[in-house]
Amino acid sequence: QYNPGETIIKQNTSSTQVICINKGFAKLYVEGTKGKNLIVKLVGKGNFITGGGLFNGNVQHFTITAVTPVSCCLIDSSRLSKLFSENNDFAVELMRHHANRGNNLLSRMVNLTQKYMPGRVADTLLYLKNDIFKENPFKIPLTRQDLADMSNMTKESLVRILQQFKESKLIKTQGSTIEILDENSLLSISKNG
Image (tube, rainbow, N blue to C red; front, side):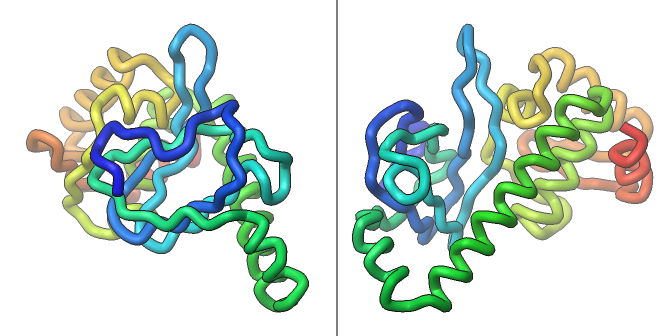
């Protein structure tokens, strides 16, 4: 059990565990230099996160921190490796999961480095609506700094672009609730970068 703000796994530490989220949301991020983080994914119920000890040595390459109260299972990766030899179908499905996750992260990195800021904010909002919360409007348990870290920009730039989206009637915000009013326009902004 983890409370909001508590670290579940710390980057650059030794770990031989796999995490299965049972309840709540956590952010998976890479800690950069000078305190700059890049949130690469939000994880919630049913997410299975492998890291150090399973495929890439014992060192975690990212940090996972609870955003809401999180309940999760920590599974020793050696037990999972043993399961691979006993259940080939399970091993193939986990490899597919890893390949999909790698492809998604690669696509996300390309978008974060090649799109202009409005395109990155549009991507973040669409990701939250369609992949994480799957509803509209949606209440986000993230700070504006977290949203900026997801969009690879400063908090000030994120706030400015959100305001532009509000003035253009693309979104509506009320506290921590965001409603997407014109998804087609956000998709166009996302596509054109």
